[in-house]
Length: 636
Image 1 (cartoon, rainbow, N blue to C red):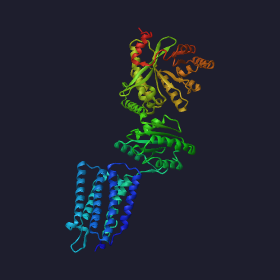
Image 2: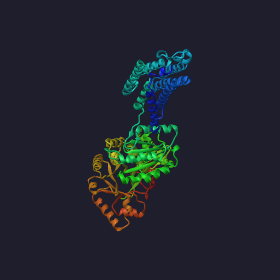
Image 3: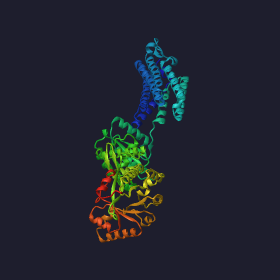
Image 4: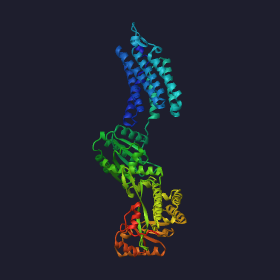
């Protein structure tokens, strides 16, 4: 009477799915899956499949022991779990296709009514005698077509098929194709089982769509060499941790790799071993080929920074000797990155501060400078985008230059400062490197050039006997195709002579850069601009190449004045200055601070003198006051 219920049922299918479900859950525990509603739905569905399969095994045991209550109990759990999976699956499809809110709500209500009604009616079968029940004669009635569960099962498949067909254009073609095939296979299994009177593989029809979803939409890629998760996984991890307000310590290692071969297998094992041995619940990421990041959760590990430094010093640094791979390591307390762009910006910021094969520990207190640099960069990018040549955040400063031959100040060097709201006054040493790295330097130079032209025009209109103002341009912006066009447009737009604008360039030993400078010099000379060779004496100058460039003024760097303590150095300075003078170059000495230095320069062919002895850099608006105070006459 009882064994007839299971005479065509095999425990193998459900037992296999129980073991598979447990295995999947263990895998999910050890890996990282983005914690969002969609991933939660399929994880819960996986739990329900495992529960249903286990319940069916227990149902079989209860039947053999003729326990009526437990037969009903496990049968109800079995069916209710499956109907709940249908409900979750429909919810998942709605999230996947994102229909209009009213349509999505309608589909959810249909699914909810269908599955709740099916579950309730199935559980009430012993009372309603509809479906599965024990009749008055002690015989089990189990007619499929009459079971509420069977009806709900078929209606759910019609609903899912309708969703997949109606909203097919909202699903990625490859995903849609696999979902169609999966649903057809599941229906085929049910039909074949019903034909032969089996239900051993019913659970499999619920597991298959879940497996498809896992592999098609939630799979995580591991780097075989390191056992690390990929870029997308790290992006999801950062977002999830920010949303939860959790903090991590990140051990970041960047390797100088052979792009063809990547991380050596032996070196990859180092990461795998310390990941599991040193920290609890740490996650290893390999977002880029050359970068490995270990995320360690603060709430699950104590003394992380101390332990991390010990790990780096005692275990990772010695690997350099074994594998001969150059690297940089940065250990950061949570930089509060919202995404990978933020994270990489902070990582790059700190790697630039250390040499190869060294490491840096970055604590919360160190992020003040990083945050400041980030705000400056944001302002620089905004300045570049707005292209306002009179942007008030870019300040024009000038350092007056004394003409040795006339004894008056008739030229000046244009200098740049920033005044960023919320940050304040910023010196060039802080923002120029950021501007060059972010391709914002040319935007700043155009603003300074424009403001220099305005200043030049004002001084001339006020009658000052004023010659020119010089503007610095970096090698980075000389490579911009529009550089000469931008320069010519701005200067000619103010209606002043090009000879009133000096152009300061820095020579380069690089062949390509040298050719670029040579081309710019030729174009500038054609326009009539006065040309300065900046930073002569800093170690980059090549006399042979310099002579091939037609500059007007050679600026001797301050370092040349500081290295004249003995007779040999003074002789060298005198020889260089005499040679340039005889070749027709004018010499400008920078960094003059004392009378002795002034005298030294004047005895060594100086044409111009610049330095704190005469003036520190001053705001452009104060230049006319300076000129009046120092006797520069207005022209009548």
